[in-house]
Length: 205
Length: 272
Image (cartoon, rainbow over all chains, first blue to last red; front, side, top):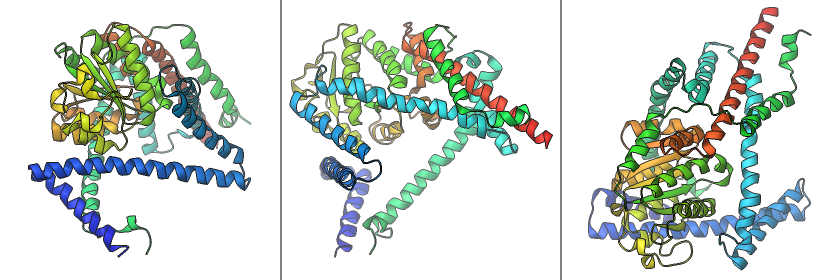
C-alpha cells in the first residue's frame, strides 16, 4: 500500500493533466485550475519542510561543535534575523529588512559571484591550452566569442562575423540537438513515471 | 629554469592583480568603447516601440542578488523604454529575492517618469513553483496574485481592473540569470500565445538563440553588452556603458593570459 498508493496518485494526476491539455472542456479546465492551485500550496509547504530541515541540520552541527560550526551558527542566525526583521518591521522600501537586503546580502552575493572572473582567468591561463585539435577548436571558439562579442572586437567586422557565425551555426546546432534530446527524454521519463515503470522517486523498498 | 617553465608556475596573485586592474581602471577612467547593436536586442526595442501607449507588459524578476550588477542596468534600460512610451508595467517575481529587487527597480524607474503606482505600474510580489505560477496566470492573474506585494487586493488597483489573464497583456519580459524563459516559452507562449522576451546574463545567451530563431521568443537582451546596446537604442547611456568598458578590458586581459599560457606551453614542449 505504501508504494502502490503513490503510484496510483501519480498515475491519476499525470493522466488528468495530460488529458486536459488535449481535451479542452469546462470540466478539464476546472480540474487544471484546481490542480495548479494545489501545486502552489504543496510547494509552499515544501518550503517550510526545507526551512525546518535546514535549521535542524545546522543546529545539530553547532551542538556537536563540528568543524566550521561557527558558519553553521551564522547561517541559522541570519535566517532568524531576516525572519524577525521581516515579521516585526515588514518589507517596505525603508525597512530594516530591505536595508540588510540592499547593504549586506546583495553586495555579499555579488562579491562572491564576481570572484569568478579572477578564478576563471587563473584557470584559463593554466588549463586552456591547445593540447590537441579538439582543445584547439574549443580554445579558438572561446577566444573568438570573447573578443568578437566584447565591444572592441564587435566593432571589427572579421571578428564579429566569426563570433556570430560560431554562435549561430555550430553552437545553435548543438543547442537544438540538446533541446530535442531533452524534450524526448522528458516525455519518456514522464510516461515511465505516470505508468509506474519508473519508481526511484519513491525511495528504496 | 627557463622563462617558460617559470611561466607555468606563475603566482596566481599576479593574474588576479592584472584582472583587478583590468576591471577597476575602466570603471575609474571612462574609455567609452564603441557599442554596436545586435539584431536580437533591436528586435526587443522595435517590438516595444511598436506597442500602443497604455499597453500592458509583464516584467518578471527571476534572478537573485548575485547577478544584480549584470541584471540591473538591463532592467533599468528596458523599464525606461517602457515608461517613456507610456506603457503600463506589471511586475512580479518567480524568485524570492526578485521581490525586493523588482519592487525597488520598478518604483525607482516609475518615479523617474512621474508614474503612479497602481495606475501606471503595479508590483504583485513573489510566487513559488514556476510552472504552476506561469500556467495559473494564463487563467487568472487574480487567482495567482489575489493581492499585490503591499497586500492590496489587485481588483482594487485601477490598473488591474480590466486585466484577467495573458490575453490582456502584450508581452512578458523575464529578467533572469537561469533558464526560466524556457518555462515562459513552454507554458505561456506555447499554450497562451503570449510574446516572450528574455533579459539574461551573458552566459545564458546561447541557450536562447534557437527560441528566437524559431519565433518562440521576440528577442533577448543578454548581459551587460545587451544592456549597453539597449542604452544606446534609447539614447541614455547608463551603468551598462561603463560596465562594458570594464568587461571588455577584462576579456582582453583574459585573452592575453590565454595566449601567453599557450605560447609557454608550446615553448616548453619544444624545449623537451
